[in-house]
Amino acid sequence: MIRAVLTRDAGADRVVPPAGYTVWLTLFTSGAMAFLTVFALALSLASGRLADAWGLELARSATLRISAPAEQMETQTTAALRVLEQTPGIQSARALTDEEQKALLEPWFGPDLPIASLPVPQLIELIEDADGYDSEGLRLRLAAEVPGAVLDEHTRWRRPLVVAAARLRLLGWLSILLIGAATGAMVTLAANAALAANAREIAVLRLVGATDGYIASAFVRRFTLRTLIGAGAGTVLGLIAILAMPGAGDTGGFLTGLRFQGWHWLLPLLVPPLAALVAFLATGFAARRVLERLD
Image (tube, rainbow, N blue to C red; front, side, top):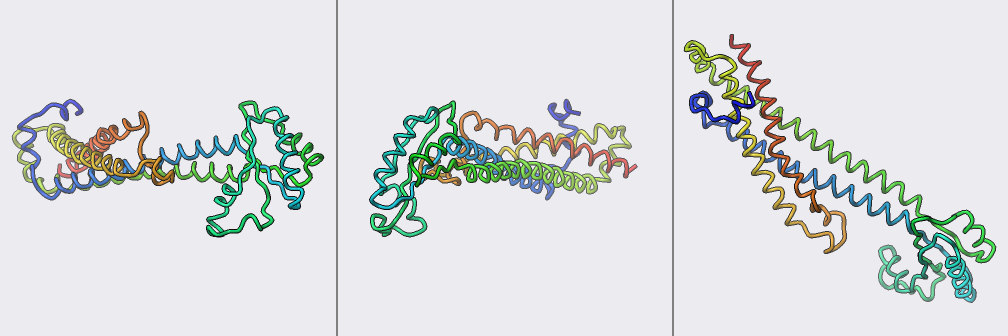
């Protein structure tokens, strides 16, 4: 039957009407589903990239928070930086400036926060190297030398992000499976309608010696090619829409990172042939069922 799809047969093509609502239904459905598949694929891949980026960044970074009286803040900050510089496994450590701390608090307190007159803790950002550091040993030393320091390894932030991104990625792949199933269902309905509408023509073809396999292959070929054309058009429109999205570097937000990256641009090219495969299987199943009922 696959050879029948790939090989053009003018006689078999006349078995299936070239026009009608089933033609437009198949083209529209396959195109719309391919368009949605491209976006679901982009969402799934983007959530995976975001999870990897956040996980790597938060896994290698930590924050040291120093709460001390104003007259001791500078002394404890200097002592904490000295301890961090002497700790194996810490690649770099630096105290955040007032402007950076103000920028962190701005989303909650607004741009006019008088940070200099408030008892805001001093934050120190530290980055670990590939080997990592002994967090428990560092906490013990800080407790002895910098009593106002609290080490936050971002673990409680990293775990929910990774879980949420993994679920979002799973939701994207599940959406693709549901779209494929919906495509198969719609093509099956369209094929059933076309076969039922041409019951008389099928009866005549049987009288002149046409086999059920010949008739079924004619419908399978037409609906498979229609699905391939519709899915191809939907994929192209989906890629154009993805290209119209702003790049991740423009604002750095999640929705601006929906573009494909690297070899992932090749994945949408698989959507039309996979949609055609779904149509091939669905139409073949529908044709066999309807032809059996018409016996």
